[in-house]
Image (tube, rainbow, N blue to C red):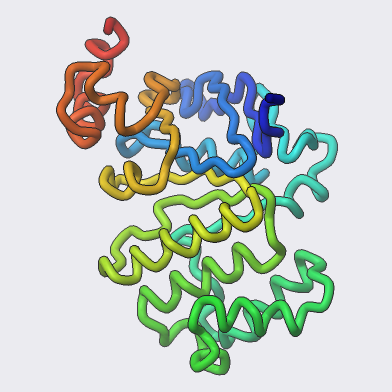
Length: 250
């Protein structure tokens, strides 16, 4: 069978700040219908990598292709195929839920925007909050609005930077379910960062461990720990954070 088309291809991606290599020539891919975990301790380069894929940061070197489009030469069409959500990237709090979604529908060029906004409001159980200002919503409600915004234009690539951090278990479970359903229904690809290893084992078919701006390990999150002599993914995460040189030797 032919290999599924890759919705994200990253080659030799690097970002240098002064004398510091925040990301040092990483390469990876995300296939259609695949959820890939991008893992590592704080400062490993995860958010910097996502910011370069989003076009927020200019890479020092390397390339990013989204759905076959080079981000450097086809920035607009590539970003139009990309959605993003993170707990730290809150929507304007002085605008209502519907107003925020309407603005992003314009930015994304969503056809038939009003019916699509109504659809995502229902999907994420936000209809009762549509005229509430985002700034007065709970963290869980704001997370649902952020995900609704990210999926509004039906992206082919979804970038999620700790989308369930600080959320209660019920809301986190719902978000994981919505994302899995979206991937199953559209065959989109997802790049997902998280510090919750149980969550990663539940949703990700493959993980990439970053350490000091480089990909140290890659594989199935359920099989990778045993390969490196660890009982759990959490133990492996701790080893990546504290003893990366020992893992490079295995």
